[in-house]
Amino acid sequence: MAEIIDLRSDTVTKPGPGMRKAMHDAEVGDDVFGDDPTINRLQERVAALLGKEAAIWTPTGTMANQIALGSFAGQGDEVICDRGAHVVNYEGGAISALWGAQSVVLDGPRGIFGPQDVTQVLRRGENDHFPRQKVVAMENTHNRGGGSVWPLQRMRAVEEVARGAGLGVHLDGARLWNAHVASGVKLTEYGAVADTVSVCLSKGLGAPAGSLVASTKERVTKMRRLRKRLGGGLRQAGVLAAAGMYALDHHIERLAEDHRNARKLAELLRELPGFSCDPREVETNLLFVDVEVKGGSRALVAAAKAQGVLFNAEGSGERIRLVTHLDVPAASIPEAVSRIRRAVASL
Image 1 (cartoon, rainbow, N blue to C red):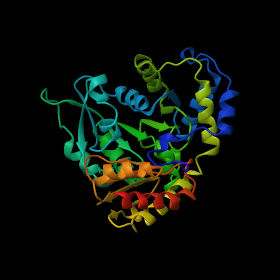
Image 2 (tube, rainbow, N blue to C red):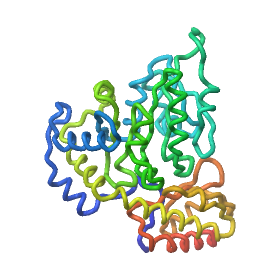
Image 3 (tube, one colour):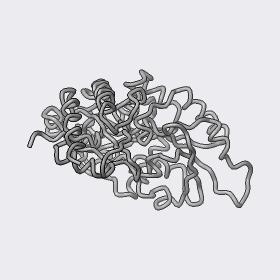
Image 4 (tube, rainbow, N blue to C red):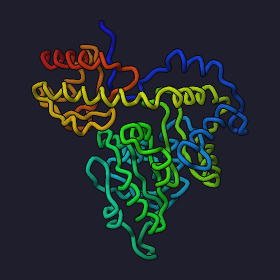
């Protein structure tokens, strides 16, 4: 069979030779004691990139988000976020399971809500009937929004309402690198709108593992305790941090190629009968396509797999999600569409 074209997620990327060498050569120590020099350098670097005092490394993005939210909210508290937010839909119910908090969800176009949406759900005054609202969470880029990029002014407006209500602000920036490259907004400007900012190294940047949360030194100390509680205190993790350092050196600006490839993929797919998408909505590397094919989206996924191209059916509807990344070069895009065309014909 021809080489597999894997468009399921940017998490499927594999370390290349340069990254593997960096991992091999990494200087390591015990991170639980704070002695891993590579972890320490990575934390300092990411904190500086985001304009924060400090940062903490975690093995996963879910852990990064959850220790951030857990530093604000506990039993009987409430987190405000978008209905499609990763922290609500894809983290195993962790907000309630770990911290005893609940979420109140907002609806915004492509996952981007506004200050007026937050205002409408604010709980005014002290009342024993109400949960205690603690934090507003934004996700940029927004996964279920199709890789949508938050306008900086919208983020600042949401932050202003949150601050006025005495709430913290968390930014789930798992793909903040993509937002930065697509919009030209500085990472420090994004960092300034939130108390805690999580970023992921194992998606578009291609590292095998690792996320970080940046914040104040005081809050990072609190999150370090929560990380330990969740089993995230690793030992000689510098081998993974070295992959992250390599990714920051080599893979941020090249995300623009993934964005171009996603738009090209959208342009080609919409020419197929039964496929509907708007290339103008493809801002980064995620693409959602509505399909009307025999057997539905799941039958299409199976048929495409037989042709050597992988992607996912989205939810219960007739929609598919495709994600471009560093292991999918531009030349693979028309080939992927040719295979999908053959898959449709086989249904």
